[in-house]
Length: 158
Image (cartoon, rainbow, N blue to C red; front, side, top):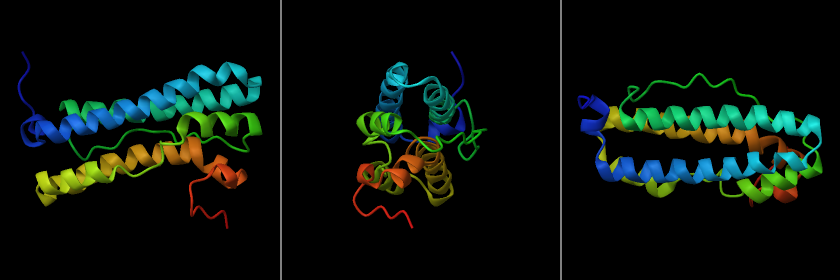
């Protein structure tokens, strides 16, 4: 049996559970996107594979933080591998599978604010921000810019 790390002993179980569920939802969306990549031409398929694999690495890193294997506040070594100039087919798949990815998990952030002292709240937000940044930079930004009809309400491309 391993020792309790600082993370495990200070992040309340309810917050850790909610964060793990959020990460699971994101992983399901990215996995569905990856599974659909075979429908794309080779160039798009390869670009999507690189971008989605980088995002999955960021999600796995966040899980390691929640498990206490990595200290809260550590940063993932994400390579930031964005989709660039997506075809309509790739954009449609991103829209289909990732429509819920870019949203800020407000309930999770509010729970963290209520549960964590300031010196842990900020690093927790950093973890959430790294995950959201990876999803946005790698998977959705170029789609939203090139196909604004797929963007959430209020997205501005200029």
